[in-house]
Image (cartoon, rainbow, N blue to C red; front, side, top):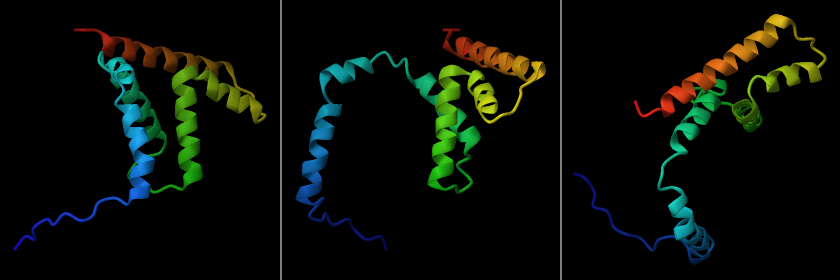
Length: 121
């Protein structure tokens, strides 16, 4: 037999006092009107995909590894393969012509896919 839900006292008053300003700020008209056109969803999904490529959800990792994966994905999303080339160079690894060409090709492919997904057709 399923038990019936019995409402409790709710969140403590102190927690409500901390959360209420956040909810009020998130429900302001100025913020909500920026969300109406829905132009950020594809970008958000693309970034999330890049994060989960680096740090799969199925595998437990520590906070440091998650932060590293997130930072790498965000920098790669914003700047592209140049980030990886800079990382290699800063760590004393000389990158060759093929490595640089692959980063350019990878960036071009990623941007091409993003442009295609944004088209109406």
